[in-house]
Image (tube, rainbow, N blue to C red):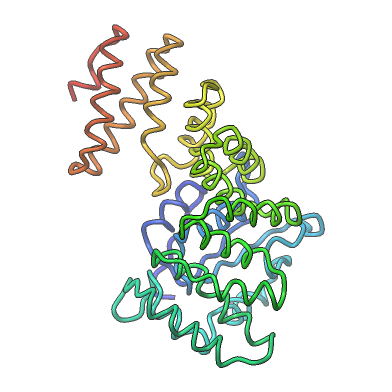
Length: 336
């Protein structure tokens, strides 16, 4: 190992993993005084494509794993003899290296090529050349990220997997393709069937909520986002979606509570939208909470200093600063 970084808090680990690439991550499953687990962190990063395809993520714990439901692919207690064998077994094999080399955020040359077209084409060729169903699954599953990032739908690979073996991620790929092609009604129908058979498949709720929103069914979308946050209470972007939609549909209390939780979990995350701080600022103004309002302004100031060229952050900071002036609170934060 050439370079080793250690983090004692999940928030620090999230920041490191979002803004830097690592070959191997060893993470504790449970943390004292934190509701979020290591598995929650991994799921959130993978779901939002913030981890390179080649990164090996090893979860360790001293607790029994019988009640976890097998969420991790190889859930088992950590033993010293595993320290060398487990990562080597989990590293991408030679059969998938051409695909990961064309995918984003890898150490291949050129780095971060994001050549999704090339990666998808390799997957298609391997898929079409395979005859046995067992050999068809890996090359068919790889485009699930590549096609979505490339910005165009390719439902044929997903549909072939659904036909060969009903897998939730393949059905979700069909729904995403339908939505990207401009058929939200079809996507909603596909997702309803998926959620009925797989009610715990949280990724389906993200796409369902988007389809319902595009169809103008805001109440349905709100219920869907509510279910998503119930399944994954530590997901930053899902808390923000739920909070903002709740706020703008009239449930301001729920809106600012979800936004506040997202702000506590990942204020520096790539998934965090500073618009949430404006919702919180209005909530603090309504409650005459001058300290809370000033904290919102300070957070926006911090974000603006990190991204001085962002016109959007400048506007949001200006709005929050005017709320401070309107409330009669000192303009200390604005003056800075």
